[in-house]
Image 1: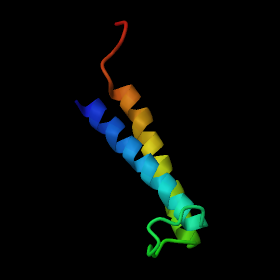
Image 2 (image 1 turned 135 degrees about the vertical axis):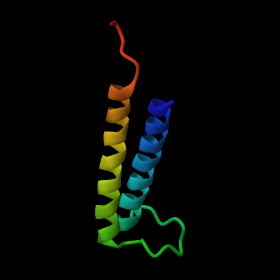
Image 3 (image 1 turned 60 degrees about the vertical axis):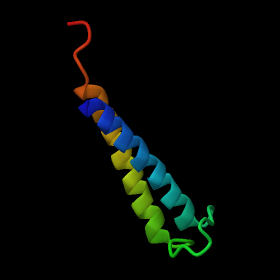
Image 4 (image 1 turned 45 degrees about the vertical axis):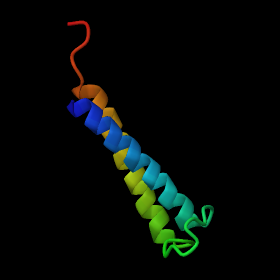
Length: 69
């Protein structure tokens, strides 16, 4: 159960981080009224969030049940 939760949270964090990167760098203009558009700090925060998401996914791979033992 923990493994599934970590994977879901990790995937969502990674996708959200990628969205923040796109908005912060001005590649994604959605929603049009967002305060994050063309703001470099949000691209940096998005990169950090994407890395955290990927780390959670890697952690989930290690937490899973022992295979082949």
